[in-house]
Image 1 (cartoon, rainbow, N blue to C red):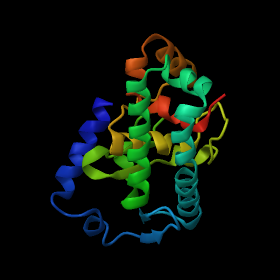
Image 2 (image 1 turned 90 degrees about the vertical axis):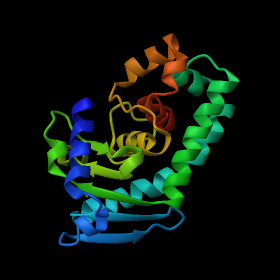
Image 3 (image 1 turned 120 degrees about the vertical axis):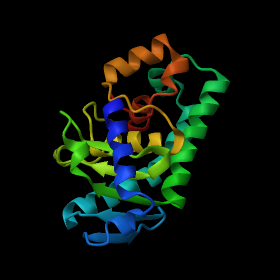
Length: 207
């Protein structure tokens, strides 16, 4: 994580005060209005991957309100990923999911290929965090299944949600597997509600 943050800082230093669109002026840039789900900018994407990401963003806008509702209506699902219920923690989970939903629907999100961030083993995608609001994607991401509902394995949608959670709710994207996430929820609920992966698995209703 520290190495990724260092590279993100390097990215900021390289681009300086320029906007993403300025920095990508000579690149392939697509601006897309996503019905019911805000807008997005894609830098250096082919049509297939761009369309996949648009459909994933649509899915998140459709399903995030259901996930927010499930915090109160599906106690077993909540307990599985966030541990013992408390009003303060469940309220925090709902606020964080709402922050993501508001970010998706009210912000122009940027997806960009930036190869320097793909040199780590297993790199799929990295959010620029609250400062940049940019999703840097890697080739490995596109080898995964697009949508996550009920799946145990990592998916594009789950990873993208986890990384945008970092950008909009400042939850920590640790990259842990679902088994470890369940253990953290059981043993340390206060920590689980701050880990982006636990939100990923809760949203996806992972098996």
